[in-house]
Image: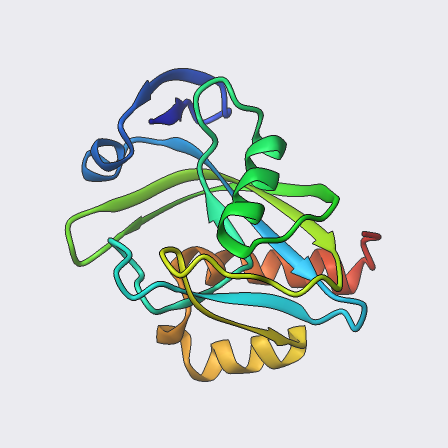
Length: 173
């Protein structure tokens, strides 16, 4: 189940996740960025059997809070479930996006973005994650310009704002 929201991120109901994606219903989501002591971003490659964006590179983890679950708590939970990691997370910003996929599903989300810092190495859940790597933000930016098809839609949207917030304004983590 996902939390359906209005354009101001106010909850208006719940719906099964697949139905929300089939009907392009606006719902709440979150994305987590983990940085290490070298300010490298931990990227995950989505598992090859994911129902959309399989095998693409994206931020450290992302998902949806359960009904009744606060978004920060959900972000911590999924970081542990997907990457086997724990970190203090800080809310950075949220944004709304809508992205249709070839399989007739649509992501229509208000995405809450969190960052954290840790040198703990991931212990990936192979049902969620195929691989991981650390990259300097400048290298991600360049690679995304040269190979946009290798990254998830939401990561391409988030990354520009993330880059500006973290590396232009030196947001403390």
